[in-house]
Image 1: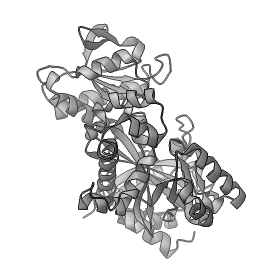
Image 2 (image 1 turned 90 degrees about the vertical axis):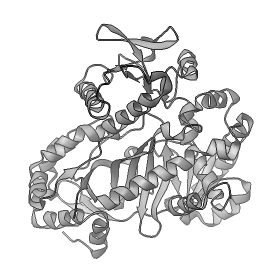
Image 3 (image 1 turned 180 degrees about the vertical axis):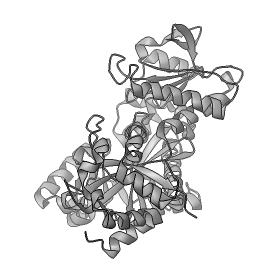
Image 4 (image 1 turned 90 degrees about the horizontal axis):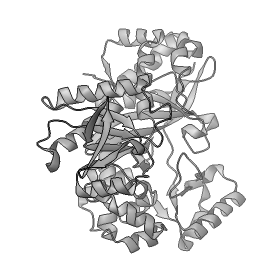
Length: 464
């Protein structure tokens, strides 16, 4: 197995442990055998597949990714208020959205532009040798993926003998920022200081899915662990407060005496917090209670507006504007790649610099519609540009290359991979995340699970 200086230094940048793991792999060929990671590789959550090796980072790297994600998160959530004054018509025109949708989004802005720290989100970043830590997009819907899957996967890594041996021999305790614990801690903290709830002895939360009949919603082991985590958060962060977690759908929530209630273990409970997993589709009756402040909603309809890639274009275009403080302008220049909303004025530039650019639909998800110029034939690139000029909601962004890392591949082996970071932000908390890796030989410019990338967990190393 050949480990180049470039690869070794890229891992060393993450942590000394990451570089040490490469040495361990070199001396222990069993780490190259996929059969030795059966517990990880045989675990599936939908279309998400997992990589057998974790990503090791130190405290410095953890602080770097969390700080960058929180700063960018705060800038994006300020866009509708700062650049459009929350004006419905201005937002409709720029984002190319219908009036009814924008009206509903702004109605739900209590967890958005007015209180930006309330939004649950995940930023996707590239760590680049030429550009540093750059944000490619921010998903600000409360059903962002990757977190709970990584929580469930963690024990499989620790119980894999070849990895357990490395952790023991390296002699440093590994930790990980848990997605579910961080999310629930944030929503409980917000509820605890929300004026209508200050004197309530309980804080009850409902995690709401579109269909309670779905197997992911009923009392599966995952749901049971989520309820246990909720009780741990209450005991540790808010001793003296009680409460319960309900996993349900909107059909099982009712309005009673101006509050939201549901049945928990045969008992009617007031619901203080709703975490919707319905892609922002919230009934009007629920929005009515949200407007009164008698329930906190994460994230609701505003998530669609906050998730638009056009927000990155707006920030990039205004990187020298006095609308932002000197520190904020530096954040834009440091962490947001050059991005523009594609219009006719950019057509010639985009056609002439195809290999340096990426085209993306402003509301695309899962890598859908993303076209890296260097991997797109000129004729097809022209077609993408033509479509984008008709739709008027696409962005063009500079291509940001990833560091190359070494990860296991195939039945037996290891090859160079590109990597994208998914970093969670809950309120003002940077909560770690996960990485997705894709062999460089398959890389077409999109590192996404739907394009074949594999998810792995981030293990944090306390190094002196």
